[in-house]
Amino acid sequence: PPPPPRGGPPAPAPPAPARSGGGPRWARGGRGPGPRPRPPTAPAPSGGAARAAAQARIDEVVDGQLTFLEVARLKESLPAESPALPTVAMKLCRVQLHLRDWPRAEEAARELLRRWPGSPWDAEARAALDRLARLTTVRPNVIGVAVPLSGPYKRWGEVILQGIGLAVGETAGIRLAIRDTRGEPDGAATALEQLALDEGAIVVVGGVANAEAERAAATAEELGVPFLSLSKQDGVTEAGPYVFQHMLTAAAQARALAELFMGRRGLRRFAILYPSVAYGAELASAFWDEVEARGGEVRAAETYLIDRTTFTPLVKDMVGKLYLEERTEYVEASKEISRREPDPFRRRKALEKLRAGLDPVVDFDAILVADFARNVKLIAPALAVEDIITATCLPDEVRKIEKTTGRRDLKAVQLLGGNGWGADPSLFDTGPGGAGRHVRCAVFVDGFYAGAARPETRRFADAFQRKYGTPAGILEAYAYDAVKLARAVIEQVQATTRAALRDGLAGVKGFKAATGDLTVGAKRVVEKELFYLTLDRDGLRELTRAELAAPGAGGGEP
Image 1 (spheres, one colour):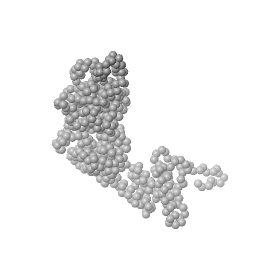
Image 2: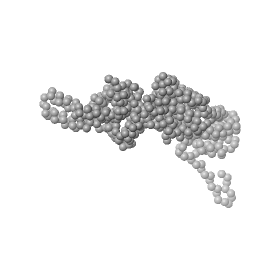
Image 3: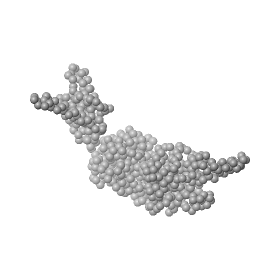
Image 4: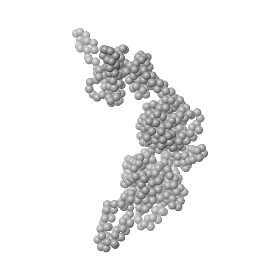
């Protein structure tokens, strides 16, 4: 500061630069509390090596130790001839790119090239301008598709393209740009960059495999491209406001089951069976959370390996028939038998009869089997063997069992499931010896059901069958809806920018689609009423509106 005027009070010291808040420091490694680094100045040159060392020190301080605000202040305070200015300008350009402030990033890059031509940052500044030019070039009629077309998830990508192909065939003027993600994080990131920078896509659909979901979402957010993720992984939209999710998740299934059986039918106590794989653990955990959040209770939970083939011991454990020494009535009865029967043979027979006659401890109203159809076909008969009655929609049959067994006030238990049940139609075979007789009256939820009576669902399912000769599945239906939704928003808001399309997607409510009436929720997850499915004497069907509204458990007979 200049010296104070003579005779007057000393001039106040200049205020210390304000420290930045708790946000990012824009520096590799950051810097802790302590004295601030002095603004870099170049020492007196003493040869090429000294100048290079000085420039390296300047680059190190500016790029690695100063915050964004410090760099911005430094640029204003340095003299025009300072050798630090090109480095400062490049740092500001990088930060603005990260913040997606494209105009200021372009201004910083152009200033660097204009004022300091030939600087070490020339190539990076020109690359930034090229990237900015491609980032801001948007083609409103181009929808990007990023799906695995090679690797272990290739089949997923192929059926998604079938659904998208049907949607595009119904809307003129749309051009698809397709890239292979290989089902891998790096492949997904590359696909998103190519679709945004090379194709100018206004929106991208894809990212179906869990392995690629987070990376695809993060890349889309970084590029500022609206992204409709087809991944079922919960939390994908946390990447930022450009990321939306349109796929059935474990949380959505758990919420739907809890809403019907707790909210509408008053059940409060549950048991859960699930395999130790991601699908089972995610659905079981989500349902458990829903039950407790609504004031219910999980009375029993059993987990097992996915390739297990014998479920009787597991079911016995769930209903208190495996470790009988823990049941007071059994211990007391066995003591009485031992006292009354001195003969070992007669004693053993009496104990066997006691064990066989013990009723299961069924202190729950419903059982969620969070597994795929293959294991459900084994679990349902094991429940029947242990006298767990699941025929909630067949009161006459329940009364018949009650009379035959002599069990008073016999209560049927509701059997519940997720969309994994629908993977194998043989689960619903009601013929002689078919697995269907063990899952009669069960209710499971799914994100799509080709046999539904909903008009939009019926129209899509019929069109898909005609075009491809095979029934549509959930991936085809969700991909179809995603493209139809994106196209509708483009037309409705006349979107020519990605920000406009993002805002339009965020405001969607009640859009008629094959998978239901779509509404984008607060977390940018597409919400809709799921399909509640049950099995009656005629086979698999969707629950009617009247059945969903009526009190009581079970699917009921049509």
